[in-house]
Image (tube, rainbow, N blue to C red; front, side, top):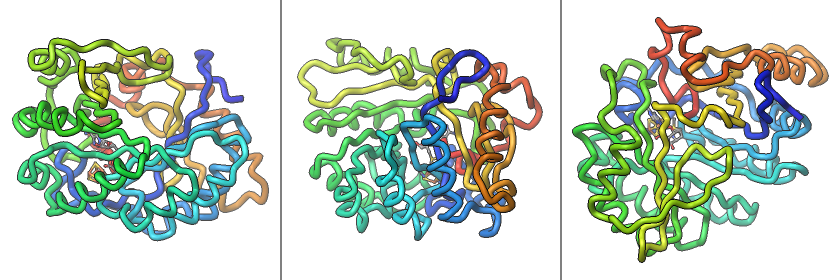
Length: 328
Ligand code: SAM
Ligand code: SF4
């Protein structure tokens, strides 16, 4: 079992499989993209499989594939097939922009992969395409509808962006009210790779809740697992639930159970921190995974207690990064 230096159990791995993406969301990266990793810098499928296997042996029971856009990677189903065979792995989840998932939906179902987070930052086509800088709204809605109709456990991630999508919040809740889906509103974080300047945020978690409660005064707070990053609610008469994630205010760090490994093999123990180590060379040179496991244990033994503490480790450079490299 992995326990960090603050006594927190680490049982959730967010594994980025690529830093590339077919969208250019303006809160994530600049229009021209970022300095993407070279193919040789990315972990291969075999290396990703080894990472997943070793992490499960170390006590991880949940793996979320993220990126970049995971389905940009042509071999992602090979990895998902491997994950679905791993004993001890109870939860396989994916975070996706839902542009390319369509042709894989049947196989995901066959593999028993149920938990899909879809990023949808607008319900109006024009707003969506302005934010993502690509014309993919129709396919995203088609794939999202399929996932909902085929009973996947879908959560929608919506970053609340000042001056861009606030007026889509209520229409999105309305549109989803007859589906069993969790709609989650996230505070914007400063990891946009220099796409735009970032100061304080208008839409912090309290402002989001206050805004929603003006239209829907009858809502109830739901119990959430201790490690949940969202505060969850149900509006009277809605089948859907909604959640609010204080990703910038960082009120949830005390119970953080997650570790991130990027597509290049950086080990990140806090979204706001610097990578602790890189495991790519270790994987490429060692014949067993002992050194890899030792590197992971070493990384979690020096973990910052909160995102604010992690941020102070690299105050000058923290906001240069793009979420497409970190994995969200
Ligand atoms: N491409 C996939 C997607 O968009 O769902 C997976 C990768 S994306 C980097 C993972 C998550 O990070 C998405 O839900 C996305 O909305 C979120 N994200 C990206 N940049 C962000 C930012 N600056 N602030 C908050 N969340 C962000
Ligand atoms: Fe791509 Fe996801 Fe970043 Fe949008 S948020 S640019 S879909 S990685």
